[in-house]
Length: 292
View 1 (tube, rainbow, N blue to C red):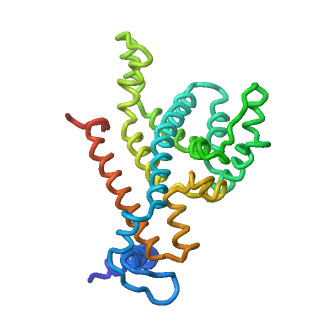
View 2: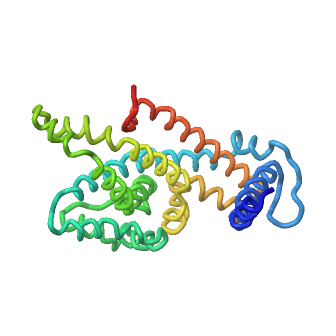
View 3: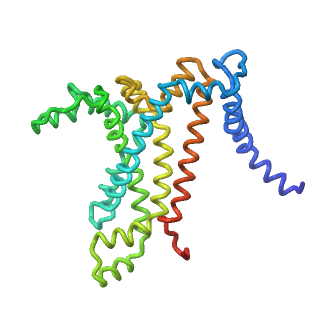
């Protein structure tokens, strides 16, 4: 091995060691423990596929948590996309105070999730919360929000839009890269605003849309903090999302082996979903310079 390669390996060794200790080893351990009965202390007992069989055939709470997560995903991802892109279109306007508006929209995104959860815990309080107070001023009797099983999941979805400023800034960067001459040519041809948006804007920013969708799906599968802080999975397990149930099995019930199996099922579901989105992207994502 040459001296240059040895120097390169020495510079990269902190990252390599970190990867081996904090990524590869935990992943490998999770694979092994998913086939065992393990409490986190003592020796693990090999049980083969029992954890997976119990999870898929006997554990009704597992399927309830999976349903809650898919419910959240099916609402939070498209709503987040519409709000994020809508804000980006507004922030793309040429106004003197536009820097202030962009900062104001982005600020909620940098607030930590646990702090935002406490804020929304007060906003959505059915008795003295801000939202029901405003509805009461309009003569509307507000629902129970996070205290009502029918409204708890929509409440968490609504709260998730608190961070829409992050995706709006990414969409805004993509919008500013769209060539202005395309709009000018479309206007000369008599294109309507909707035609300019659907035929120019959306195709030109479609790679960013793909990135947003994949990241939003991954974050949706891992939704945890709002339910843990605001509802603890209740009422009646209506906000018991997948990762929260996994957390309970690992750290409350002492079922590390079962939690490891759940983690691998979540990984496989996320991987299949991401691959399906990427495969479909060939039909709707446009890359400049690409020939079709």
